[in-house]
Length: 258
Image (tube, rainbow, N blue to C red; front, side, top):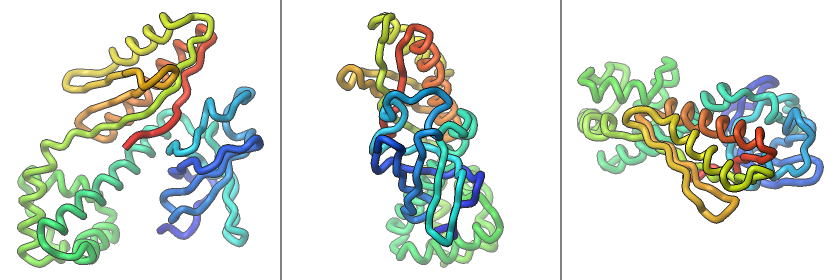
């Protein structure tokens, strides 16, 4: 857990409560520390319904606008985060979560407690500012395990085997529930927004939009890396929002799906 968020910092928050005057969020990188999103920090536009922008359970990126460690109070903003910043921060977070899951699997395969991996690999990597996923990609490509990795030989061997079998074939996936309100354009506008969003996927990538139950739709993105998944997802959301807005409609993210 980091000590306390700093003003101006980008943070990952999960919405826990939506109220008339703002939103409470749980800061995932700060051991669940609670922060508040004032109504004025949700959008540059007039907010008629907060749930068009933020809903309970939704996880997204915020910027810290007020931080008081003495009072354990943090105010964050949604409107002060750009699409590029949101995509990059979410990609970074997803990468951290993914590595954590992979290291748990490694510990299980090697038959050791996860603390062995933490002490011998995670902490030394952090001390050297080494990106763990990047390191695992290098090992998968044939590089030797660095000497600073302080793991028993059998665990190092398990690490190499795990990387070579799992890393190269990993495909990153992200799913998000989007609410699409047609406005004056009718369902034709929703169809056009979905088609244009899906056309953004490149070779070897998949982007699908399926009906959960109007007005809720599932956006599913699949690509080779977390960074590309987040980039493609934000491009799709932005394109849908633009088309819907042009015809008096709304495209609003409801929740991220695991």
